[in-house]
Image (cartoon, rainbow, N blue to C red; front, side, top):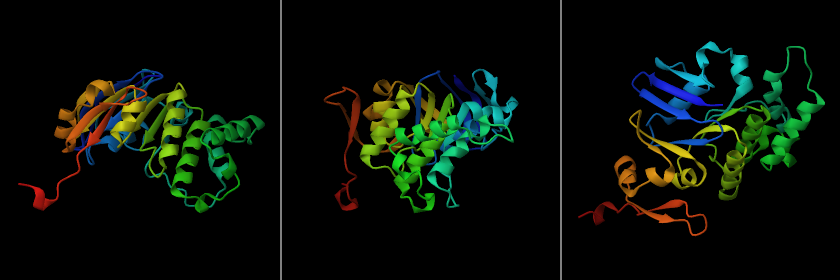
Length: 257
């Protein structure tokens, strides 16, 4: 399912932003803090209503879809996903099946199988009976991703999905996401992870897109210096050939001539 943002504007934070995520592709939003990345995603998963422009899923305006209908095709893992009550992990993931059930349905055997599979895919099956409040930040993040997968969406929206994850689980989760065949729209702070797993990237600065395209074309030392204010060196990964960035450390103030 395609995702299209057409002239999306949110006050002074995001201005006339347009992009398209083709069905089955992984599309990354990158940029410095405060550039409008999270605000853009919030318009896609309906936490914000744009003050201008439109979001479309499969060509249908999101604003014309019921919340239930959009939840059947789109799932999100957000920065502010809070788990304040000590449900078990199994119960939290089971909540993802609610959009697919009527008001009087009980959890079916198929629902249980879908939830167990989602937990297994993020290496969290062993946590099923744990209370979510007892989990580490990384464990909780993997449970939230499992819940999104259990929703069986066609579009997956992820805001910093590698947050709290160790390096091994960062790559496991992004590799899994990239292999699902879903349309994925994600915010990533690590440009090297974006280069490794995204088909397309959009670089945001001051609420506008400043560059778009495949990571191999977009992530140049010149762009990184202009947008992020750091000096970078581009090198190919020795195995995959994917472009990777090496950064110079910031000089101490006394070292600046």
